[in-house]
Length: 140
Image (cartoon, rainbow, N blue to C red):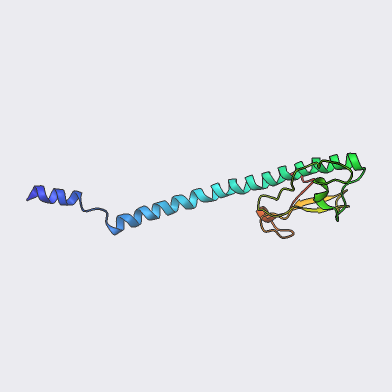
């Protein structure tokens, strides 16, 4: 009989309490690790958007060298694809920011020859943190 109860003890599985302890431990681990992972992803999206703005700045500067001015607000960034009097554009397509929103362009700008910016994750003017606007000429 002793042999039978040892086998039964091995096959009994997990109790509800044991499963709950494991779930709680996993929840604690996820709550500690997830913010760090999401923070890194948010930083990567902001960095990628800044790189796209810098690439557009290069195309805008090249446009200016050839046309003695930047595209107007009405012409927009589309002028970089089909510039007047040129068979080829300065870029093949207009990228979107990391949150799949269009870049905003205004020339003349409020802060220089032109303003080029992303509205951030929330897609609205202003904001803080990951929702903050990302503008040309920002050093951070």
